[in-house]
Length: 434
Image 1 (spheres, rainbow, N blue to C red):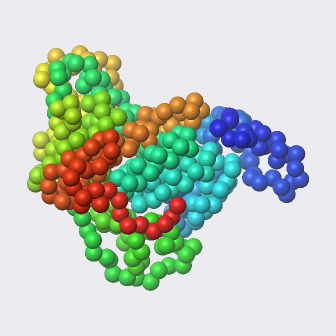
Image 2 (image 1 turned 60 degrees about the vertical axis):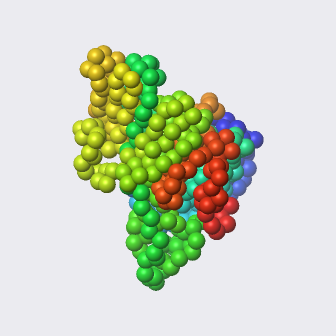
Image 3 (image 1 turned 30 degrees about the vertical axis):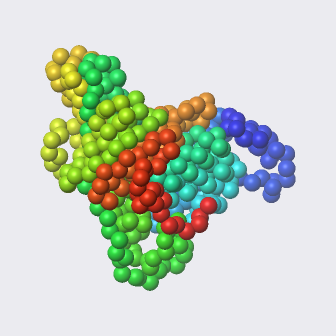
């Protein structure tokens, strides 16, 4: 397949075979030549992976099952994760061909890679996505896709200017029960929708540094590369083991985007607001309440124990619940795969929906949408424009909580109205990684 390159992969292979053997830049394994169930190499999407951690362990196995996708390279700054990722890929394909890298810039330099899965920590999502797009790669980026409003803007601008295909890892847009809830909200069967509820973590900020520890050898953990654009601080093993969450320099939106990137995104969709965002944000002890220009209210409900009991929500629906409320009924949906509606007469609208067939963590359909759009060059379900608006809404809500005051936002200029301090927090000091 040709993926908007000066030279298609078929052409690349022909020119490589015509050159002396030592000039062939990339080895093409036997199972990449059209044998078995895999697609022929000329029709294959070659995939590189940047960051192999807990979230990637959900994403990558689903992508490896795609017959027209071949993962050829994997990168992580930690040796243990590089080895674990290579083991997964090689075991899936029954070979030892997956190349590993410590520095993802080397992976992006490979001309044979069409697309990348970016599953690093939050601090690298936007910079790595921008660099990948500049290198001519299509991008599937885990969320939150930008550590700040400014990073989200820069990412969307880059995707548009480079004309790359981009999918934000907000996979619930591609799951049947969430889609059914959206259809109900759009159908008018709930009456006029007036309130949207998005579950989010209770926000928090940690600014203290963990105690300094001796840094490992660079090939074991590349601490400088791990930090990325974040301000430098001494190494501590807890950070690289996943303990970076909640720290101001590393986490997105005071942790509000951990779930908000999903749940606010779904509320945006339910309100047909993918091209805008709420214009007012007001914090309280239990939530941030936002209002759209069309009068619809969005409530970001703080959950103190998001993986335990969730007061006010249907417990059986699981994590990341959202609820859409209209004059004549409501619908609530969550990660269990189920859906609840009131009044009961609305259940007839759910006929044919296979409840609990998938969970909110299932990335198979969302990944498939990404790969199909690579071929068609169409917009994905969670493209960069969709990501930009929903993420900025989350960041605005987080800043209203942080500053403990009502904020008004111009959704076109993406600036806070009459609040210089809030506008100053749309970006953060960072090291130059671009």
